[in-house]
Length: 319
Ligand code: ADP
Ligand code: F6P
Image 1 (cartoon, rainbow, N blue to C red):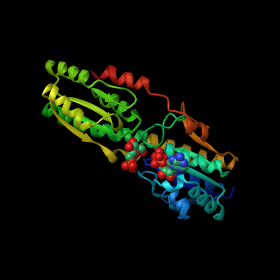
Image 2 (cartoon, rainbow, N blue to C red):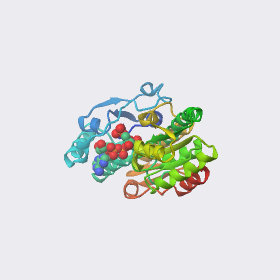
Image 3 (cartoon, helix red, strand yellow):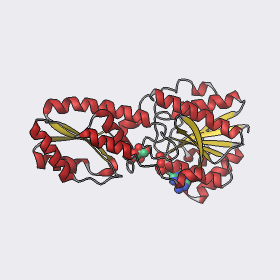
Image 4 (tube, rainbow, N blue to C red):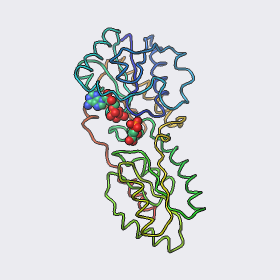
């Protein structure tokens, strides 16, 4: 192993830079040449890369996003795109590739592995929907961003006796919604994994309202419903003044938390160590605070265990 490439793909998240830095510094320690492809699989298909020396990764640990940039590149899903990427890797003399991203990006990593190229995946997605890791990179930072915003909104909700529907990210995953509902003391977490009865919610909110609890926070995962429709239903049923806040991409950025910096540093170094040991086709993850590896095949075919305990806790503490 003489040269390792690294790329960040799919939705960006805080901690990607810290992981790149860790992989680069670990690789340099073993006298490896390190290069970074720009804009995920797009850079791989276009052979658009930069050399990563120690200085190139200085001053990025604390920055959100990814300085290599990320992209969604549909061309890489095609056999032609993958062959182009493979040809570039061979031409550049790259011996192993580290791929950071969500479930789509890790599916792309498996495709390269199946073509015989050594890859190691690092789970990075604020949705925390990747199996075989307790936490993906960026989740903890996103949660802290959400909590900061919800705390602020709670202040104004109580001043004006309003109910707020706060939409958080998660097309298919309610992890951010349920954890932030617990940590911010929201009345409800509405998630795509579980059906909810809006009229029952309205009845419960009305009962609280009549008791004198005149403000409420409902955290909605984006994939669970329409925030404006839910707010309108609450307004119609109770007469509660309602507002909607969509937190959007604010959640994905910002300085990574200590948890994400540490996780990124551990995963980046482990990815390089694995390639040096001749391992391939694996994802590095976190389980019970230890670094574990799982085949990319199992990751791609697997399903994240539902976070039932957290959903139940949010429910018990909410109303
Ligand atoms: P994420 O990695 O955050 O889940 P996407 O699902 O958009 O984001 O995937 C990121 C990129 O990974 C895609 O733009 C594509 O280049 C690649 N990718 C996704 N799915 C596949 C697939 N089935 N086969 C090959 N590449 C894929
Ligand atoms: O990375 C996953 C995610 O954060 C989803 O929760 C969200 O729906 C999506 O990315 C939005 O990403 P973009 O606007 O970059 O396509």
